[in-house]
Image (cartoon, rainbow, N blue to C red; front, top):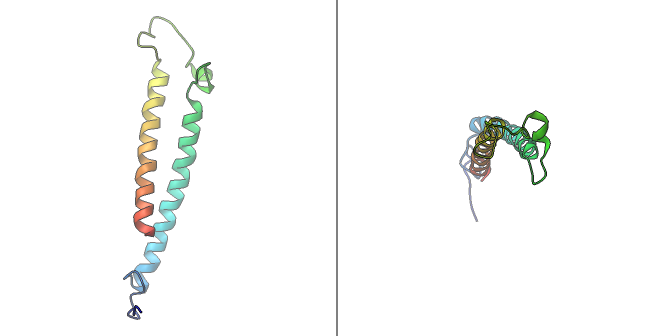
Amino acid sequence: MTYYFASTGPFGRGPVAEKGCEVLDAFVAVFQLLVSLALIFLILLHAGRGGGVSDMFGGGMSGAGNISGSTVVERNLDRLTVVVAVLFSLATLLLTWLLA
């Protein structure tokens, strides 16, 4: 049987720290939600085999500037998607650590 001190609780947090942790948990959870929605949106913008939504923003334009096979818009979309994916991963790890 485990006994806890009256001021700490099962996770070793005091009553004052518990309220601050609840605010931090809520903030990180909302951040996780916003980042996940942004990641879904950015992934849907990518061109598939037959084009995609990114064609509406100039992704399907070909010409002399299209030497490497992708346009500037697609490269910037790729970079932005990677940054948001890293933020999503970090927020997931932080939530796991906070709620464990």
